[in-house]
Length: 196
Image (cartoon, rainbow, N blue to C red; front, side, top):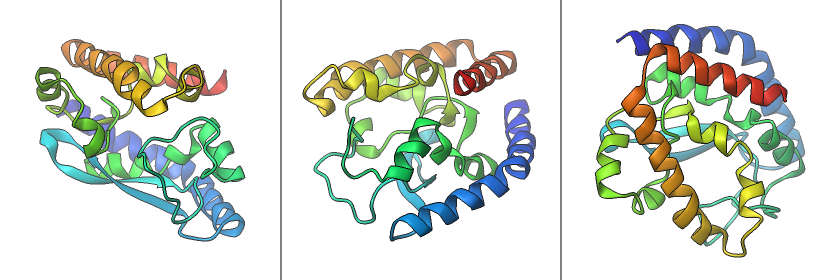
């Protein structure tokens, strides 16, 4: 209950602060590439409920790929999109997801149903017992996931076999130790990553 109260209050505060920036970025995306400025995608939330995640679109409209994964030097990403992704600005609309109750500020990063299919069955039960988050241990540890993927030739296989298990372990560790103090600590560390 306290966590949800925290999420509501601070999502309203941050939306008030960042709404002008969000609108500006949406206009820039609209002017520099065709298609809607908001990207919507189904993700798996608490109790395995599907919800629509919101992001600022960073790819060319109607980009087609055999993989749901975004990989290093992905030609689908626009020039503006590269900038947004680098500074995680495309994630700002997820403040609405937090306000709506689909997400929390801190929790396991939400995945698509496809990648959830590769989760360990025991860990999956734990991970989806809470709301997914905007940031978590894995977001801090792998702030620039592309740099890690660049070391390998098969990006999707690397993501499934190396990154997903790491994310699951981090999520289970967070759930075991979760508290408001820990959430605030992770949020502060995330902000420091941005400024770094």
